[in-house]
Amino acid sequence: MSLLGSPELSIAFLIACSVKTTILLAFSWITVSAVRHRSAAFRHLVWAVGILGSLTLPLLTLLLPVWHSPALGNAAGLWSPAHATAANASSHTLPAMIVDAGATFPLFSKLAGLTLLVWAVGFLFVAIRLVGGLARLARVSSHSRPLFGEDWMRAVLELSKSLKITRRVRLLQCGNPVAMPLTWGIFRPLIILPAAAPEWGADRRRIVLSHELAHIVRQDWLLQICAELARGFYWFHPLAWIAATRLRRESEHACDDSVLNSGIEPSHYANQLLDLARTLEHSGRDWSSALAIARPSNLERRFSAMLNPSTNRRLLSPRSRLLTALSALCLLLPFAALRLPAQNLAGKFTGTIYDVSGAAVPNATVIMTNSKAKTTDMTTSDAAGNFNFTALPAGEYEMKVLKPGFEEYRATQVALGPGREYSQNVTLKLGSIIEEMDVVADGTVKAARETAGKPMRLRLGGDVQAARLLKKVQPIYPLAAKVSGTAGTVILHAIVGMDGTLLSLRVMNSQVDPELARAAVEAVNRWRYSPTLLNGDPVEVDTTIMVNFKLLS
Image (cartoon, rainbow, N blue to C red; front, top):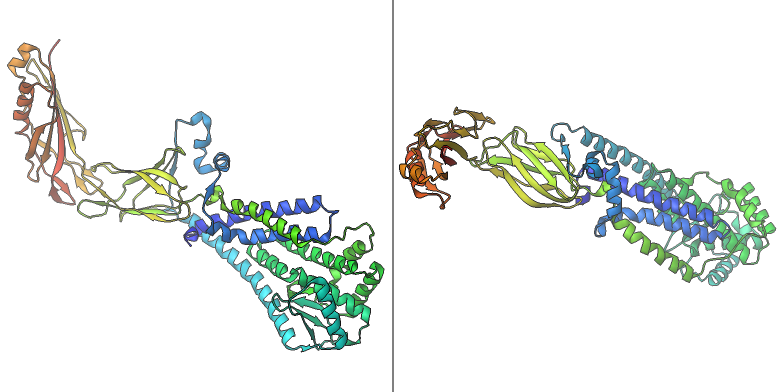
């Protein structure tokens, strides 16, 4: 996608998602701590909302329209080293200037690429563990046989009906007689039982099925897989690991509450769990990706909760779940659409500078000015005429290209949106020649002032040889103008031809005295220049000549 079109943009995208995830999961943690006396089902829902929000943030960020926060943008300006001057009220008249050295010093791009590689390796490692766990579950399930005992099937039907489970639940009996009961699956959930399960009594059978079916009705396995995916994407983030662990823990507590709410005594339930933990095996590997009834690392907390008579064991109604999900969605959508300063990048802005002959122009200065943000970014073209801005903030710019011997190129309203790459080629026209001379009424002519300096041939940028004035005829102050006291400036425009003669000489200011204009045209028309050379070939170039007729006071 365009938002991830370069390593720099990808890193900015990852950082922005991580910042938002930090806020989401930290808010979930604070909420769970504040409502620790509420039921485990509610605490599990809070963690689930936080994890699902962090998992869907990258996708929503790419799909939703952009929303920029002025408050965040102003706050970011105070901390951004690139545009720190623009945020300082005491220097509001001076724009910040950034010299973009990305074209000649690509260290930042290399670091961004290396960072992405490290993230990809970490993500791949967690993903392999998750896929390995799923493959292990699939292998165990494929080697298990269906359990069709009448007592088991009747218990499953009764409990499914009481829990309002409409999906078909399959019971499998694995070959290991001391394997821990577990459940997994979404559309066709499975409960895998040890080979010794047919020998269990009615109480243990009911307890185990009640617990595993509670996981199924609550969609705990799907939520846990989402937590594992979020932990893989944010493998470097401690809160992602904490959230996944807390989600699994609260799901076990919530299922315990569901079992106890069915009428089973807490002490009897605790004894059954303890006996299962003692007699059955558990892999001890969290990457088994299944929900087991008696995970040893979590039993002590569960015993404490189930034996505490003041524990809140209320289950969440479908309406409460729906309202919570809608509320979370209303907060998540604008939060995902919000672009942090790290995401407000237009990506690379590149192009090539040419002259009118199609040759590349090296060492041209390219200036991008953002008047609203009061910032100026600058770079130069390389030997091939290419320029490159690695990461400009999104906004509307005025583009200038400066090169001695050429006219200034200016393009207004260059709009750069976030997360996209732009390219623009520029053709520079040859600069015009400006001559100015003073004609004084006493017959003397003061030294002419030329914008190109002293009349000499110059090589400008290695591409343009400026014209040199070879023959200058001095204008004569008209007698009638001196008698009448008439003075003024005659502005002439002409084209210096390829042979150095003036073509299309004309007066630009029609309000000037005709005698002064005639005298200026008669003299200037006899001027001769050396031709202007572009890449060694003569070309025509505009010239402006100002003749100042002055009277002595």
